[in-house]
Length: 108
Image (cartoon, rainbow, N blue to C red; front, top):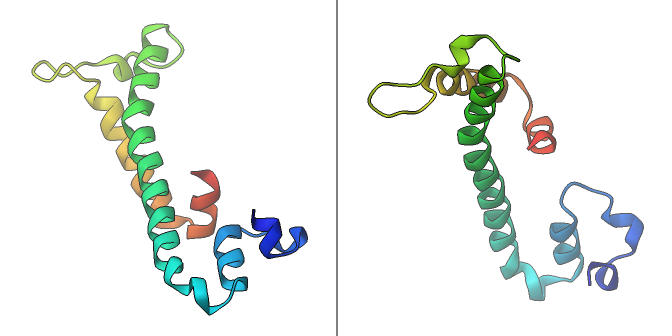
């Protein structure tokens, strides 16, 4: 559908849907905020899935002996791998604070 609005070689950008809507003219300008909101929600949902799952992967790897045993520490009350969760959160904060948004978007 996008190639019906713009030529295919103009769609080699990080935001092809926004480019196509902009090329469609002022009749579809009302759609631009929804596209931006959709992009933000999409990136946020990916981050919300990745952050809880990474400590579980570290936990399993530590149980198999591929990582130090500290990663397999389970919180006595909540029964979650809390050390791996804390370290993953710290790593995510550092990476998010240091890298430009374009690189973060490509990584996510």
